[in-house]
Length: 264
Image (cartoon, rainbow, N blue to C red; front, side, top):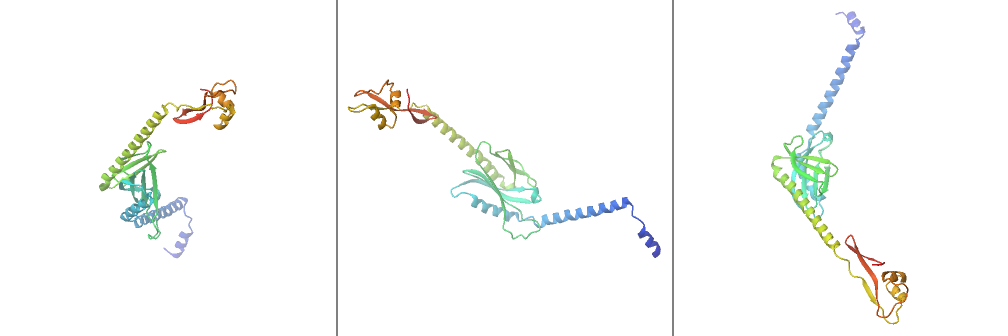
């Protein structure tokens, strides 16, 4: 092709269909490059799962209270979309107070791997709304531990093959601790009911001595003469030597003994 023909071909306008195809090709190329970069970053910064599991165990020791006792624990994993579905190694433990989880967050993409680790943590006390059982695992795990907490919150923790017996021990510990708390609540309720069924203590009496008046006795027991008259069905302030007066009366409200002043 001659130079004049080439110049003519360059001056020829590009059709709108061809221009759209070129733009679409550029966009596809950019998207493909972004996907490749994300995949490369995920692969290069997937993290050391064994090291993450060890760090989760160390962090668990830090979050436990000084006198809190671990009954059962198991290594577990999670995968979150915001972490590009990379493995989050962690540990779940049933203590004598709660069910607690600690996971080591994978390192950030395209950042140095020597940053201090960060963790995700949650814990729930034992109550009737908390359950833990073996079930379907998360992506990358054939089996898992399903935790349902108050507020309809659900966590699916992956359980590696060798950790299944420990995960079963965690689930059994949750059930056992809940049973203990239900039994303790029933025992306390039974004790409360038995106390509430008791009759109130007898009223406190005062025998009138020579020289005493109703006003003086009322002041002695920090009540008014009108209260003493009402509790003893007196029509006036006159009393006699040797007369027994009720100066305090008791009753039970919700099992508790309280004083009250008034007629029988």
